[in-house]
Image (cartoon, rainbow, N blue to C red; front, side, top):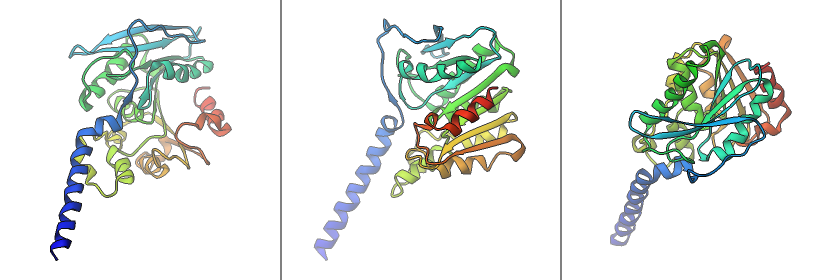
Length: 265
């Protein structure tokens, strides 16, 4: 019995250590930034302007503005959780082929952007960039696009403004929904400092919503995106399933390329 109790205590202690470690390290699991020196020069095939916006708390947020001649509008693009604008600028500029300008920003701690991470500050930063665009474009010319982690910021912005449309690529229902799938043995809802309640934001969105999700997504389960879509009125929703699509390769599928061209025709 004593040996059993000792073993039980070791297991329990290990479990507590895992919980404590998860709480302390969750930012490193959610956010995977790559920093860039301020003297770094971006190079892309599409014409662009680099700029910074300053948040209320003094954070400086780096962004790229791709512009085309006779644009039909602008896409505010919120990228995924890894890398920086060196990668995401190339990805976001893909949409200029549809005759849209594109603005993509780096979150705090990513690339050349500074500032302390918090859920509230990330939402405020997203709105800061929407405000930047709304001074240059009418809202019926602004489309908001979110990919992976960026889908929660895109949904937030669409919930408190009136953009033309919202496009979500590989979205999640909320952060707890994804974390529970990955760590089913942990009380993730109680541990998470970042809730990212996309499911709540989507209730307050009035514009049309397009969702892309791959059936083989190994990062954000297809079921999470599907559950999110079920909160949207059918007349406002276009849910596009990419059969065998994974998290980062939807652009490789003809179904995605045809559908996104139609979205921005």
